[in-house]
Length: 126
Image (tube, rainbow, N blue to C red; front, top):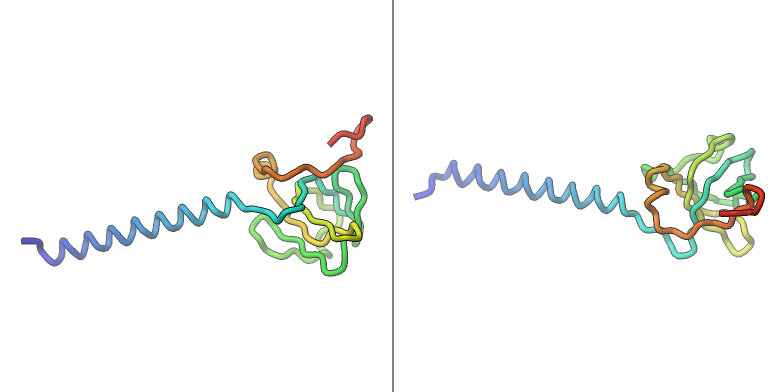
């Protein structure tokens, strides 16, 4: 006959394992973030608002641009001047950048997002 305390401990262990599994899945999902179609990967250098250079190509930050940190927090545009970072970004129909995700160099190396065209170097490579 099973003792009630043994059953309770088994239930607690089962709940702990389920929670650990859920945390692992949530962490893996965050590490494998998917970006909307049309997103491009590049190295950004933020100038004075609204200027930005991505892969040595000049862009303008559009009205209402949203910049997200690697932790998915919104960064005010006033804090971007002089910052350099790998980014995933989207442009609108007029060519203005309207959404930017700052990514770590490690994440950028693993992403399967098309690279933005570049004009860096002698032969305008990506």
